[in-house]
Image (tube, rainbow, N blue to C red; front, side, top):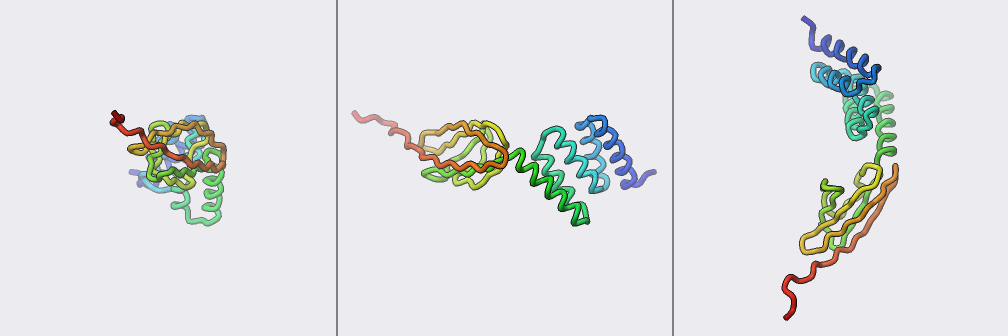
Amino acid sequence: GATPAEEAEELARQGIQLFKANEYREALAVFERSLKLHPIPVVAWNMARCFEELEQPEQAIGAFERFRELTPEPDRRQIADTKIERLRKRYFGALSLTSDPAGAEVLIGDKSLGTTPLDALPVRVGTHELTVRLTGHESVARVVQIGPGQALSLDLPLQLKPAANPPR
């Protein structure tokens, strides 16, 4: 029978054929199996390329980082760094957010980003519905536009909710 390394090589070849046929999801599945059997650096690279084609920059960055770990060659690591940098610039901006008082939860859509203060958090380029909420305070909703490589800073004052029992 074939060794895991040989099997991995064979799967890598199949993946490349699928990639050339623009069958990126199928190629990914095959590359994934190849990497599990035997870590071949170029397979991680090819996975990153699939993710790029599918416009999944987070996953592409992860795969380029995996390639960096696997490859022994400094110049190839350098190329991966450049690819990662380009993806970050193209698909992400940075959001810095402070609130008064601090410790408010920040959400984009219904995904929590953490609590204020947030410093230069990578956020996908585009228009986002931002919500900042803190117990006992009015929630603040903002629509923010983030451009490629743009650093956006917001400082949001939070209003206390009016007292529950009205004066008589």
